Length: 88
Image (cartoon, rainbow, N blue to C red):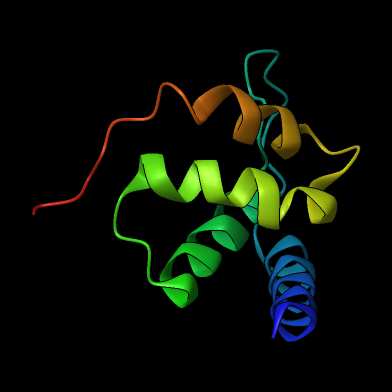
């Protein structure tokens, strides 16, 4: 299952990176729009409603997909600081 998720998220990232407009440079930006889209798709597919829980899980289950990318730092730093969007 994990290999299938990896393949899907790789395809999502590639499509988002190709289709989204190139953002202006910003020194404060640590995650690209394509990375955000990819993480949002992963969260929906993994059915984890809480952002905090998802970021903690993503660090362990998806970190290898973002190795060397800015998103791996964002996943790691946001895991302890992300507000929960869970309603229950």
